[in-house]
Amino acid sequence: MAETASILTVSNLIFLATNVTKKLDHYKHTMECMKNAAVLEETVGLSYYLCPERKISFDGFVHYEGRRFGVPYWYTGKTCRVKRDGYILYVYDPGMTKVLTTHDVTWSRRDSFCRDQYTTEQPEEKPTAPVKVQIKQLAPPPYDPGFSRFNFEEGLWDE
Image (cartoon, rainbow, N blue to C red; front, side):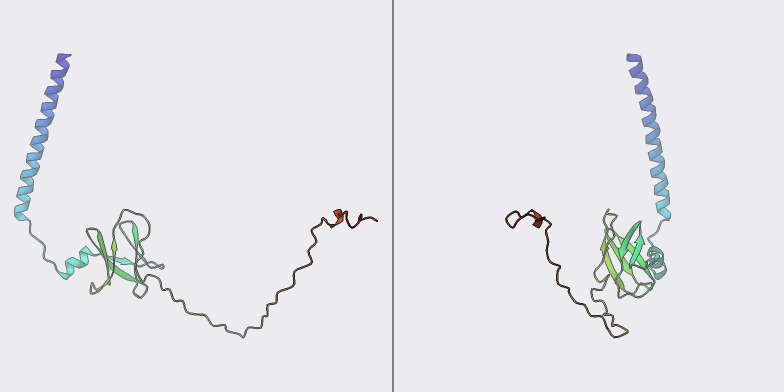
């Protein structure tokens, strides 16, 4: 039993030593790469790259990261640009000049609606021809419960 414990201990030490060596190699590689890394300047081209253009569906939603986010009805364009910054999703026009709406990003798979996505006022449709239909309510038929033949106070039904 003691031999098995010592073998496991030796194999664990070998595993730990190789793991530490790999981590040190990774750290050295990261430090070498960071010497050549630079901060990107925020340019128009970079913002177009970071905010991909998306099609707006017929029902007023844009797809991003497997979820659907609403776009206001007053925006008449067919495409928009979408950018996620932390837990906020920004929907821009294609030229990135105007923020159309923002959404809170959650784990929910439900559609995320925005204010003004659907108009509450619907145009009233006027009839194309004059209305000639008249509706009348008929009087209800006389009530006969079917038990009137069993009314023995008035007499038998076959008399």
